[in-house]
Length: 590
Image 1 (tube, rainbow, N blue to C red):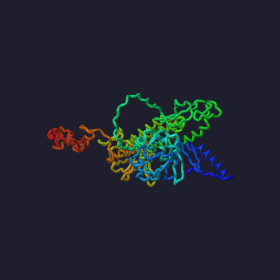
Image 2: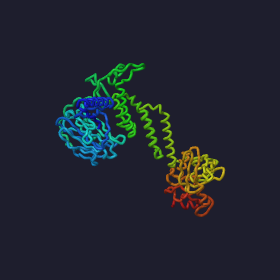
Image 3: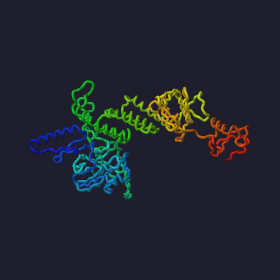
Image 4: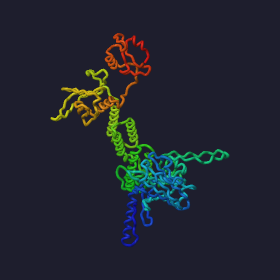
């Protein structure tokens, strides 16, 4: 609780009163949208509409107080990150006064007072916000004078929000508790709902039962001229015909009660935001308003924090992202100021995206598409030309990560080496210059040569004795700095090899190992009746170049044991050599 109790006695008490007055004045200047009021000898923080404050207590009470005999029913909606309730149990109101978790409970409503108890520490992790709303059964909130929303900790006031100039609505969102940096904050909202409690509940995903009786048929009145539709305008300050000397806030759907004097926007002598006279003019343009400079600086500090929260949660899109720019227009801050403040946040967010994408050492196509989409949206919101080379480097890293992920998943390259003679069924995937490093008792020994990886074996050919190892004897492949480390079950099989691009070579060898051990399936083409040349060579060697039925060595043909037309595969195990006579006698039989 932020409060200062002032003395009322003479001497030292008056000194403390002057100190308290100075403290109040400093608060007024330093806190944007936050003021102080004296109640029962205690200075209490008062929030303006749109302002927020940190809630350090684990359990608080939210109290509504007003004058008059009208009844105000409080409500609470526990929202997920989607901005909707998870189920109807997350709507706490007069027919369901207690949330199943016990985190939010309605208190007893008395004359001129209503409230809720909110246990912030017991709110489930899936809940991102707790919206506090209210409704009146008859009339509107204009009939509820002196409406004050207070947040208390064990009976002590933390801060108040005085709902001034309420709209002619039957439902209103007073404020919301929302998560921020592992804690909770409270924001004063004061947004009315013209469609009443039903419209407010449906806005947050509550399924409202339509138990209203069917309408009574009535005589159709004469057709009347339809009123002109409401203007389609972006939220902002606009001059109203009723008073040309003031501007009124349009929230995108209706006019609110927020008004402020209209000032010339391009007058060098006065500030177009507050109307106060500017300081001494400077050469080259109008000087900044010293009155607004500190206030805008404080606002932008809050705005940067909210922008970073939105970026990390939803990215540069969605309703919360649009609300950031509406907030600048509401406080009459230039969007160029917001773009300038967003630039370092945008670069930091892109770096964070890349770091999180590489956390599992795999880059999916969806992650690459999300990165490109985010870059386009951030370029539209801020000037990122100065960070062009950095963003290009981040994208190249994402592209390389995507390429390595595809290779590890079995999409292996095929290398052609006419001077390299392998088995008929072997596919060459990597052939690079390498230095074999063997650690002996006398020290490391280095041997230059070639590292050859095929679909069947891993070979090293050097000036001395080489090595050959089947994939079945290899356990793992990884890269360390500029070397490829191979772990095998034999003493001569494993080792370290220094190559030019160790990360890529290790990815190709790892993908080959995974395919050889059937951990992944290599992308291939659809099976056909055509028999590849290497497969013919294997079948010819297996059958010794003669008919598998009669042993003839003339007029030989390759035949599918299970006919291809009946689902037989074109594989070595399903092929045989038959002479023409035996093949005609077999036909399409299995």
